Length: 407
Figure (tube, rainbow, N blue to C red):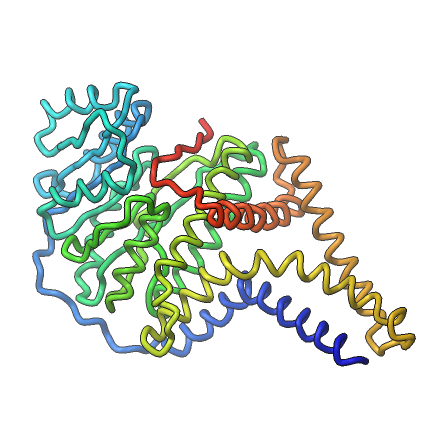
C-alpha cells in the first residue's frame, strides 16, 4: 500500500464519518451527553409578571387568502386579549391585504398595521416593526400558519427562567396520506429536526429558531441586516451568543402545509441554504469554542457541518471510492481490503439509484419510504450545493420570496 492510497483511505473514512456524524452521530452523542447531564442544577427563575404583555408580529406580504384565518387563530389563543397585541406588517402588498387589515382594525382594538406602497423586504419591515414594540416579549409567526390554542401561553411560560432569551416553537407539516414525496419528505425531516431540537435544548441551547413561531425578550433584539435571508436564525443565534439560552417549546406549534411541488420546495431549500452560508459568514465568531463552549459544539455539529461540509463530502466519497478501485492496477499489488471497495461503491450506487426512483415518483401518490427518504436526503444536499453557488455569485436579496404551499 503506497502512501498516496493510504492517504486516500484515511480521507474516505474521515469524510464518511463526517456524513454519518452530521445526520446520525450527533443525535447519538447529544442523547448520551443529555443523559449524563440530566441532573444539572435547577434553573433560576425570574420574578416578572406571570402574564406579561406580548406583541405578536405577523409578516403579511400579499397574504390576503390567509388573513381571516390567521386573525381568528390569534383571537382564539387562550392568552388574555388585553395582554396580546397584534402587529401585522403588510408593506408593499397589492392583493388587498392592507385594506382588509385596516377594516378589521375598527373592530379589533389590539390590532395594529404597518403598511406602505414601497416594498422594503421582510427584514427591513421587521426592524421597523420592532421599533414600535413596547411589550417585554415579542412573538414572530407567519401568516400562513395556524398555531395551537395554547401556543402563546406556552412560549411565555419559558421566559420565567432568567437565562432564557428566546423560545422557539415547533414546526409541524400537515401531510395528507396521498401527498407526494415533497410533503412526505418535508414532514419526516421536520420530525427528525424536532427530535434534535429537544436534545439541543436539554444539552444547552437551540441553534436556530423556527421562523414560523418563535419568541424573544424584546430588549435583546438587535436590528438585522436588510439583506439577511435567515432572519430567525440570525436573531436567535445572536441572542445565544450573548450568553442567553434559546429554549424549545414543542407544546407550542405552528401547522403548515407542505410545499406545493418539488419545484417550490427546491426554491425554498436553495434560499435557506444560501442564507445558511450567509449566516456562517456573519456568525464566524461563534466558531470560537474557547469562548462559546457548548454553543460552538452544537452550532458546528447541527448547522455548520450540514450546510458547509457534508454536501461537499458526498460526491468526493464517490471519487475517492473509484480511485481506491484502481489501486491494484496502478500498483500491481492486491491489498487485503480490495473486495471492500467494490462493495462500498455498489452500496453508494444502490442508494443513489433508490433516490432517483424516488425522484421519478415525486408527484405520484406514494408512501414508499424506501425511495422518498433517500430522495429527500439527496435533494436537500443538492439544494445546499445550489445555494452555495448562489451565495458565491452574490445573488442574495432580503425581499420576500413566497413559496407556494399545498392547498
